[in-house]
Image 1 (cartoon, rainbow, N blue to C red):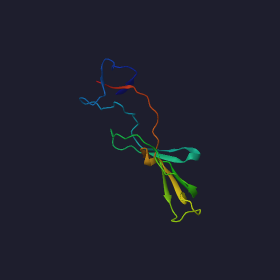
Image 2: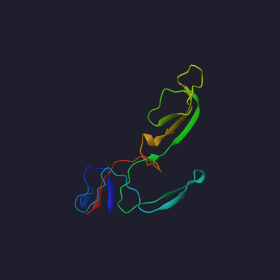
Image 3: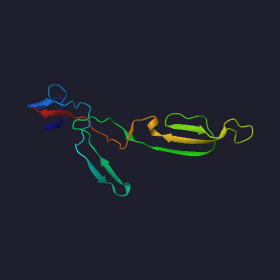
Length: 131
């Protein structure tokens, strides 16, 4: 049996789930229920959650966000989640060196770990297993 405690020590008869002996290492982990299911979120669609193997560790991530816009713009460059692509070889206005037709893209995967889901906020508790 696994228990979480708001304490710096496990209660008597419980062992710290720190990977020593036969205990799982749950330090710094957000524990999710094992199994798979599809949940209908109404107007937001359905989501299928699938567990891998029992005890599998899954890294943190956020859902990918991406998009783009295009037009004739003066653009000083792109950094972080943004990128830009000059699509015309000539200037849009005579004498302009910065005005060109550009596609400006945003993709959160350029700067953050992304996934098909956004992982929740969590709280630190001491994970102990019944000895």
